[in-house]
Image (cartoon, rainbow, N blue to C red; front, side, top):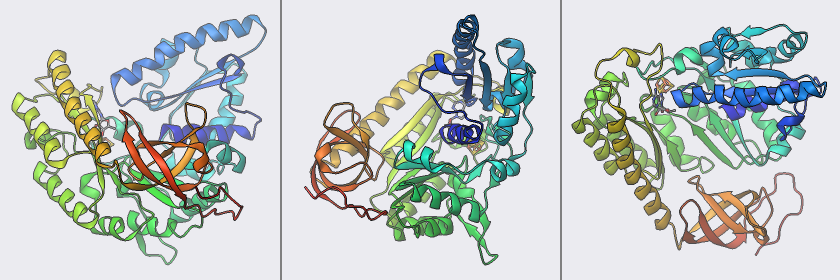
Length: 449
Ligand code: 5AD
Ligand code: SF4
């Protein structure tokens, strides 16, 4: 979501003549978009600001001014404290007020120090300019699209309900219009974003209530959009319609990020997840019945307060039971203001380290086994960008794995049928079979190979 937000901030500033640069020394405005989810991410902001201060001093010597801003969830959570800890900062702006960025930057340039951390999320989406065609084109053939923000679930470890605020869904018309713009600019794959994306709901054109499944069906009608994804989902919001969409909608990719966090019922309860390990397993059974080739992905936290060896073994067990194609795992990080931070029995760092290592070894094994199981089979590959080596492109499999392909297979934006020949440690290798490209713009495209 921060990637998406950064792009929208760039779009908002484009009207005032700002253009993105890869060279920080050239920047008249440096905006750090920050994450507060774990302590490590939040602390990185201050070390980065130290580096930026040196740069600002250097530029000042050359008579060039630099405006420094902190955006994102650290800005929201720490507000004025950031100005105190890092006086180099000129403006602090929370994630709900990015539409005010152009005026805030103008004020900051007059020397005023600004902290903008109101919750005004409806305004944000109404007033942010639509992504520019040129900027979308330069960003490639896949795009993010935020459909929902914030969270009302209050898991006891998580800062999101405090930093991103209450759950808000964007209206159908706004989402469809943005998706159409993306498709017109050549985007072929859209990932719908939300902290609780499957809780998205909105009013359809006929006045009836839509859920995420209905929205996906509507987006699938947009010419040129060939692949749809969504992330991140909560198990409790995985409704029958959405499961059916995985069965019925070819454009919906067979990949589902569905975090469970832990396999222990005791810890699930303490985390306020409001479901049991068995509930989660039953849910996955239903999803797999509807879409047998779906790849499951998840998030895990080890070392939540009070987690015993036994609880951790339950996590290892659920991982074995589910068999994940991919997963993210973290050591519990105590976040100020969350109930978890007040809990007794915080788990020692050393124990967290050991558990994380064991869990990650198991998850890596499963991820590699999944990749290996694809060798010899054919898949459809969306070519996304040049690879690291000359003569190669990189694309994504339906299951989100990077796939390396010879550049003669087609062009960026093409979907090509390939045969997987080898599973490397992070990517798949393949030989092209034929170019399935149906160019939405009707241009003559790469020949079949
Ligand atoms: N400590 C560790 N991991 C966390 N996450 C969220 N809050 C914390 C925390 N305090 C993880 C969860 C979530 C993912 C986005 O980040 O696994 O699903
Ligand atoms: Fe955080 Fe997700 Fe729980 Fe919301 S549902 S509190 S975003 S972990």
